[in-house]
Image (cartoon, rainbow, N blue to C red):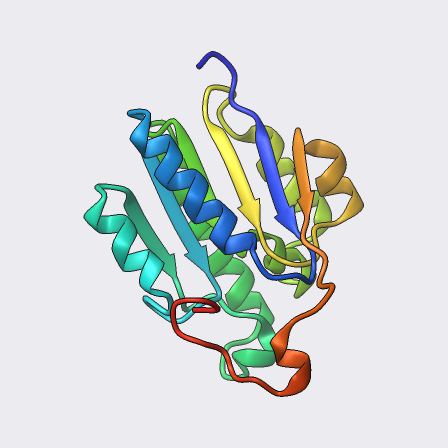
Length: 172
């Protein structure tokens, strides 16, 4: 691969993380070096995160970085500091990978931890030879404009709306 492109999976519908996991598996099956990173989810919240490791896909979790509404004991300044530290770590590690997937990255912007400008600057400064995939609700117009691929997941119908609980193996 000569030039890495930027993908965004966003929207309120189900499937953003699922699509990114599928892409990670596809890339690995073609011999690509894959890094899969998660923000805002409890450590190993989904079985897919553990399964990726069994496929020799490197994983990293920044579970401590959550939306302020869900992390009331840490102030916004501290969340921003931790986020920038994590993004520097990801950017440094990216040189060793063909594809980097950052699950829930868009939510860093939607929750106000990062500004749109900071997110776009991160996207644009990413290595040109590394494919970058960003998931999560709330991708902004600036982020969408900076991306090469954008997929919007729209919730048309979901069992949650009838009160059905999340099911292991489907929603998590």
